[in-house]
Length: 387
Image (tube, rainbow, N blue to C red; front, side, top):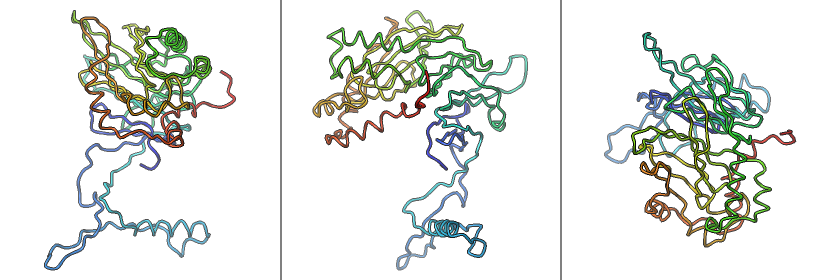
């Protein structure tokens, strides 16, 4: 990629990858690039005695500039760097995929989604696709799909802080859920740019924090001091936002929005009605700060990864060295159709994954560096800006 990728998704036909980078640009890459003679850059291999196979062809790079057209010292160094890079040997094959620039933001891009809206039944028009992107400047932009991604259909404006995650509901693609550095989640009719529902996530997090410290049975993980936990979560940031739809014992389809907040040892579940109204359904304790989660293809399981290096509710205070290597790093939630609720699954998967992961760093400096890698959303928050 030209710059460091930060968000990735597929087009609805599952044939093209859409990748956004930290400079705000979105590129399209084919999932299965056409294989031609020029697609692979091969390094020459030595030909032994009696080996009649010819050397592999090398694709050479020739810069457009040369020593006669470059005069400044800076440009001469840049030209020499290009020539050196072209002749540098690489031990592996490099797939020369085509990067097609689709659109760009003037701010740091944080998340991307691609959705197809079905055409009306009485028309023969194909489904229209849209690319929805979010950035650090509180914007959610709606653009047309390929090949008209340069056309902006509209914006969803309602956040006052960065938007870190967006999620289009598969069972109702006109609904978009968004969250970030604000104290709330928003439900959108994104085609109209209209807010349907606003959920105060800060109150739910605060309520859970009070319950955690008031209930001894929940204090099964090492937690930071209560006052410090309350102070450190006056501002929250959504780190995961996904959705799933399951079937109850009576055959009813029920949709859930799954939310994780940076530095919080819990998963928050919400129900979304047909009118777009979203209500808090349950909060499930996870035993460690959630750093990532995903939904199974069967839609009835949620797998989540935990930070075992830091204390619960903390992004900087380190946990005990022994607990880092004994606490499960992966957890599972299963949907119980009979109880119509999400419950903790078997520890078998957690133990198998836990045993496969090497020991976490015991050195204090290494552990502190891991915190910078796991928790970075607060760096998106603009300093000195009034809430």
